[in-house]
Every structure is written in structure tokens, then in C-alpha cells.
Amino acid sequence: MKKIVGRNLKYYRYKTGLSQEKFYEQYNLNPKYLASIERGEINVTIDFLENLAKILKIDIREFFNPDKNRIITKKRIDEKEKEDL
Image 1 (cartoon, rainbow, N blue to C red):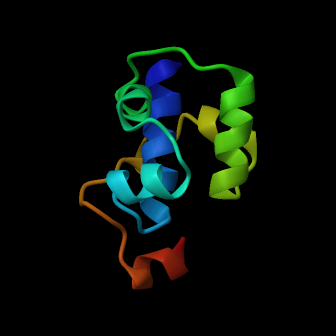
Image 2: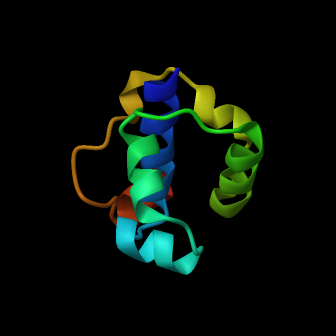
């Protein structure tokens, strides 16, 4: 489950169009902590996921979606792709 949550966090962060550094800076989040979550290395609280869901403007349930098609293969999603999502 940690890997699924991490993959989905990374996916939705990429949809913001922000790099890791800019995303963390903009929302005052600890970059090392979030990078560990994205790699599926640590557990997170529901409260923390609720906060991230608000930031990303998604339903918290999206973090638990096992859809493997959400794997990101490039640094950021470009504007055209954002429209298609």
C-alpha cells in the first residue's frame, strides 16, 4: 500500500507541473519526507494525506487507487497532457 500511495502522490504532484523542489517550497513541505513517501518507504497518517489531497485538489481516495497506468515516465506532464487528464 505504501508503494501505491507513493506512486499516486508522485503522479498528482507531476500533474501540478511543479518540480519536487518547487512543489515542496510552495507548500512548505519537507522534501526528504515527501521523497520517501513517493518511493513507498514510509507510512503516512491519514491527516497528512488529507492535507496533501487538499493541496492537490483531489479526493483522498485517489492515493489508494492501484491503477498502474499512473506511472510517470518523464519529469513533468506538459500542458497538452494536463488537458487530457
